[in-house]
Image (cartoon, rainbow, N blue to C red; front, top):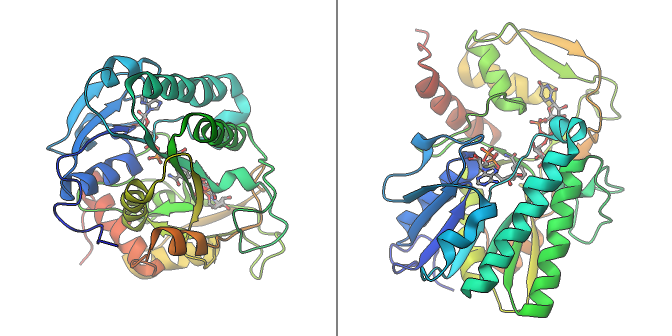
Length: 336
Ligand SMILES: NC(=O)c1ccc[n+]([C@@H]2O[C@H](COP(=O)([O-])OP(=O)(O)OC[C@H]3O[C@@H](n4cnc5c(N)ncnc54)[C@H](O)[C@@H]3O)[C@@H](O)[C@H]2O)c1
Ligand SMILES: O=c1ccn([C@@H]2O[C@H](COP(=O)(O)OP(=O)(O)O[C@H]3O[C@H](CO)[C@H](O)[C@H](O)[C@H]3O)[C@@H](O)[C@H]2O)c(=O)[nH]1
């Protein structure tokens, strides 16, 4: 197997990155360019930022629902599909948005891919498809029972992709991310509103919010708070490059991506205090609806099938990278 870090791996191959103005998509687009792919980003900027599209990528402002306009006759060989609505709480309040944007949008993309003869796909799935798992670490064959519409839409898309692989020979990989964190160079997390724990704790550390709320202190975990598996966004990006190169016509490979180690909400907050050297005011709050107590991945399949080897597994390092990006993006002054 040749290395994903080879500068000629992509050899100018044309790939479409949907959602490439977003957090994960921009980091993967930067990695694809590094590896010699010709990258086009399709993004409607609904939650993304034009400035996050890496230099060197072509940018098309538009929706995945209109992907045919971009794909037809343009010589793309693969699509990396990140574009989605992905706020769990919003999906509970407004499921129509999620079924329409995620499921109907992906169907339009798949139809456009078939029409244009684009036979490879890497899709951003999620640990949210498992709901409250019966056992951890979570393997891909555990029952899938999402506890919110967001996870349900991602599971529906996984099923759709599977049937396209079986019937039409699509070569696809669904990567089920656990909790993505960290930053890569000038690319990092800038959601508005932000719902993810690490950037919210960083905001509190920077004094840009009064405090961070700990959602639930009575979970059946050692310190009573939820446990999650945090994966560095650059390790995640490497998995996408491997998936792109290891795909097989007619096969739908599904891989969990996490580090296999869980950290509680309180441990994350303590890590931010240690890494930033700043105070983080905390308030205890009720549980957030639909939050499983413990989500930790088994990524054995990704290691075996893709040869994936995460190298940035240390939580201090992940938080340090996120903080570096945060300081730069928000103009936070370093304390002496
Ligand atoms: N961040 C995580 O922790 C995490 C975990 C599991 C799965 N995921 C999945 O990974 C993907 C990327 O997540 P992210 O955190 O980078 O999100 P993000 O919101 O930063 O990026 C999504 C991008 O898709 C674009 N977009 C949304 N709908 C679109 C449409 N119809 N047409 C074109 N562009 C559209 C947005 O403008 C945005 O730039 C999503 O599919 C998400 O569900 C993320
Ligand atoms: O202000 C906050 C925000 C979060 N949390 C807690 O921190 C943990 C992590 O929460 P995030 O919102 O950062 O991440 P989630 O685990 O809820 O969800 C993320 O991971 C999921 C899979 O694990 C899905 O992929 C989803 O898309 C992605 O956002 C949870 O226990 C949550 O309750 C707090 O205590 N306070």
